[in-house]
Image 1 (cartoon, rainbow, N blue to C red):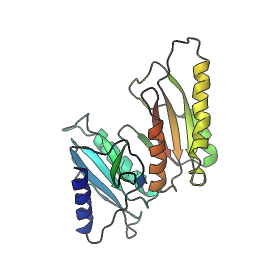
Image 2: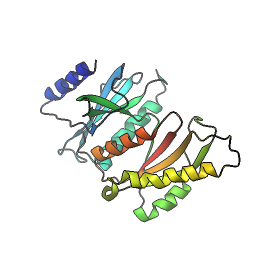
Image 3: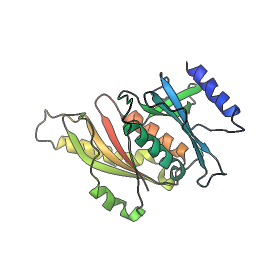
Length: 236
C-alpha cells in the first residue's frame, strides 16, 4: 500500500507541468501506513505572491488527510494554508467523521519510504508579537480545551524555538522536563500520578517546514504511555 501511494504521488507531480514537491525528511516515523486517505498539496511556487500554491481539490472530509508540504517553504508561507485546512475539517457540519485524522507526509529516510506525522489535535495560532513580548503572551494564554488524559495535568509551560536555536532542542526542552519532575516531587499525595502536561510552543515564522518537521518528530518521541504532551502552537 505504501509503495503504491508513493508511486501515485510521483505520478501526480510528473503530470502537473513540472510541479515538484520536496517532502520533509524524518527518521523512524511512528506511523508508516495510513488507510482511507485523501491528499492535499502545498507547493513551493515562486510565481505566487506568497510563494505557495495550495491544491486541496482531492480532500474528502470523511477521510484521513495526508497533507504534503514542500520542505523549502517557511512557516510564514505554509502555516496559513495548514491552519485553513485544519479549521475547514474541524468546522465541517456535513458528513463529519470524528475518527478521521490529519497527517503530514514525510520521507522517512530510515526505511526509504513514506512516514507520517499526525497533527489532528494541534491548535495553531498565527500571532503578531515581538520576541521580547512572548513571555507576556505566554502568561496570558490559556491551555486549549482537550480531553482528560491524566489524573493531573501539570502547570503549563512554554518553549520558544527560533531560527538560531533550532538545533539545540535537547537543551531547550530539558528545563521544562525537569520542572515537571520537580512538580511531581512536590505533590502532597504520593499516590497522585502525572501522565501528561501541556506546552505552548512558539515557532519562529522564518523556520523552514523541514526545520518544523524535524522538531515535531522529536516531540513525538517524548510521548509515551505514561507521558503525553499536549501542544498549542503559536507562529510568531
